[in-house]
Image 1 (cartoon, helix red, strand yellow):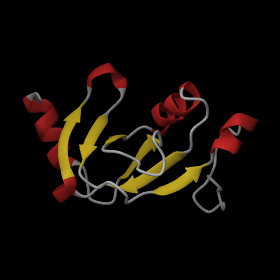
Image 2: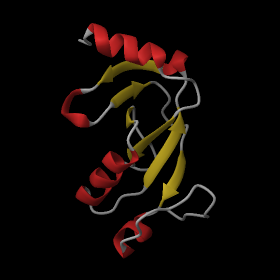
Image 3: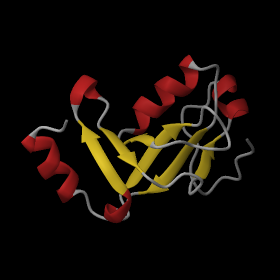
Image 4: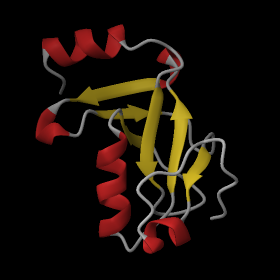
Length: 106
């Protein structure tokens, strides 16, 4: 399924690298994540302003990586381990960014 380049890239991602996802359905964040926060923001807006969540990459949880379609998609087995970083309300208000330090309500 993965190309050799994708396999090599997946193996090179350092543990702790942030991954992002538009949390649909919420609260189970799912297994498909991106390395690019802007991609998660686009999906969050597409799905009606769902919250954006983050998790830390862990090599032992990694399943697949796809570089196609410019999404830098990482499939991981870590359902339930995530943090809300931008709420639905903030997205609907047009918030450009929501930092991890802010108290974001889902």
